[in-house]
Length: 192
Image (tube, rainbow, N blue to C red; front, side, top):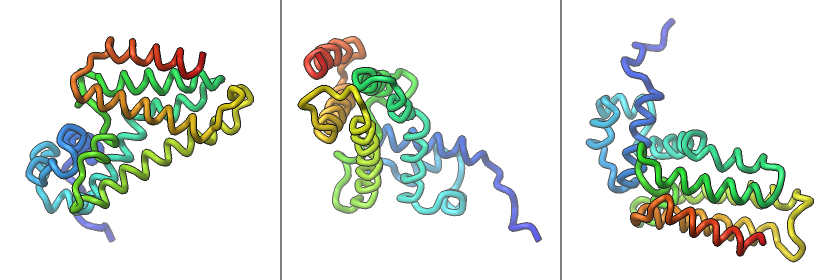
């Protein structure tokens, strides 16, 4: 026996629009009215397809990691430590300064702009960020070309600090060219 009426909307397209609202306005800044208007569906449809606002946010984070933020996982396949770091830093610049998407980084914005009532959304964003840093640390641990004297965990933390800084600066209005100049200097200093 069928399980009810089929959905009258494209769940992938609706999730993409919710992602953009969260990215632009943050978790707390995104009201259910904003989300329903952007997604083109009503509240009962959001709850039926995605769960509550927090569950929708977690799905949007997952979509962000596998969509606009996919460069980070792809960078881990670069053949050298230097190329991994370059791809992450330059990818962060490209992502956070796009003209066809909100500026900044969804995860960085979410971690820094959530109050006590949104602790679970903040924790979800932190968990995504930490998963990325853990994957980077493991990549460095396995690297035969990790420079002498470099600790894989510390280097992974430093690279994430740089990419987070890029996101904050992009959200504050720094241009792509300005960020590239800063990144080039950081890369020359970090991995001479």
